[in-house]
Length: 400
Image (cartoon, rainbow, N blue to C red):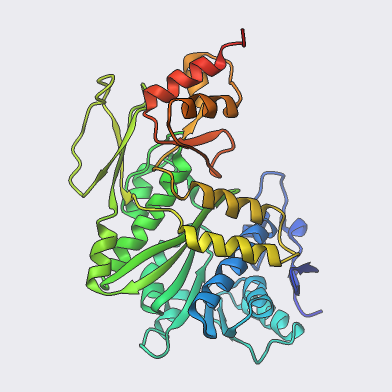
């Protein structure tokens, strides 16, 4: 028996790997089994890994060369192994984990998939691992950071270990701070305050990107967001890092605040770093402030288009991958923040109308409307809040 704990063999994508048998470590229904196992493995993150393969493959095709990919927090190794097996144009994959048992399991999985020549394994602290590749000719083309919690402790090392024009993929699973349950924790970890709004998951995304922008700016590096999505219990960002003080300044210009009125649903954005307390210009209520955070695009339309085509080529992807990519693409041109129809109806004491009817009423008034992947009952629109509320009221009335 290769391991001193319960394990099982699973198939994911092109890989066959040994993983901890999670049912053996879950003693109560409410326990989070992946965190109890001696080696971290989360089957729910298969969707995350599927989208990562599509995004990194598109990045590789854009660069037009063989690329090196690093996974500083490898766990059992399923992500890095799938990269090596399923992405064309990979020169080498570097996998690391501080946990000795994770290192041994990943090593076993690499050998079982006959990838010993394509994958280098190490067993050390993730920041130390990345720092060893910070010299100009040693840097990675792509770094994928998928931690249990926040990725911010790894940002500085990742930025230094990524080449100019490289791709950085970040996952954040600590949604309570990012979504306004613990705003002080968000300020400590991400450098901006969060608020509990109906679009809190978008605020979470913008706080994560904002923390990356400010961390990269210290090194005179700018950030171009290529793709981002919210799925299950986490948010995920793919960004290209571009060297140069001018690029860093341009990224900082996309930073600012979101102001939200909890009384009338009005919201507005403010670019810059000196945002004073303000009252809503429609109802006079004091507005809540979130930020500083990223106010720029959450996805690049051209990159999304390439991802859609790449996803169509692959048969073994989670069926949700294509839907998420398409929805992110559609809303990439939309304004910051979205409205949740149910939230408005709850406050007004109205029955919830079909979202389609609300959208049609807004479009009749010559406003644009986009669905959002963040919430199935949410819409982006360039209409002001009072018009959205009015359209919801009209849509909630029974047909005459």
